[in-house]
Image (cartoon, rainbow, N blue to C red; front, side, top):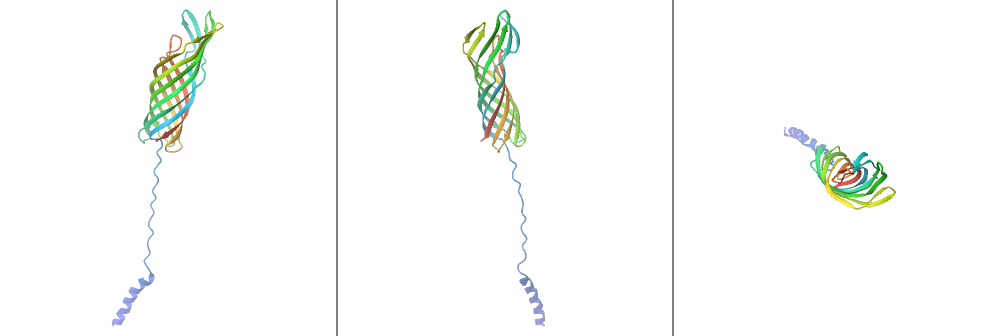
Amino acid sequence: MKTKLLLPLLAVIAVPALAGPPAMMAPSKTTIAPPKPVYGVGWYGAIQAGINAHQNIVDDGDITLGGFRFSLEDNSEVGGFVGGKLGYVFGTGSIRPAVEFDGYYNHFEADIDFRASGAGDGNVSGDVDSGAFLVNFLIRFDLGRCQPYLGGGVGMHYSQLGDGSLRGGGSTVDIANDDVTDFAWQLIGGVDYYFTERTSLFLEYKYLNYEGTGNQVIEDRIDQHLVGLGVRVHF
């Protein structure tokens, strides 16, 4: 009787042993998405260069001065500028405020034709060299690698007229060098394209005004239109 009970018990024990170790389930794999790149935040430095595409030293038209009527035409040449920026972009949202220090050297050749009633034609010309130093306040829009921005700036300019001359009546008279330091302001629009999270190429337009540059003939400010390219690097 004991033998009959022992044989089934041994069979129950032996079958799992002969079957080998229990199968192990493969662990499940969880894929973690990489973080979305964040372009153009924090501190940055930039270099910039471009053209002074147009200046408005005088308004084309007629004025009366000293009993003479003058007809004026501004034919100032396209100039150029070069400079740098240091700034900071706040936050990582889709709309980001930024502040920057903007400084650059600006040059163009002034050239004004005039016709005086009873006195013939003439011309006033000279080199205008200046340094502009402004603080800009910007709003940047995060569209990924492409980031447009708008803003404005206020500051100072130092401007100097050199190699000036007045031609008229068959003679030429040199104009003494003159300089002025006064208020400057600008409106800005631009766009960055980021090649990496920290490095971009930007295209920028500035509507720049130098105040306090005028007298009875020249306007009391010089309006300028600057278009430039630059490279921006975030620290």
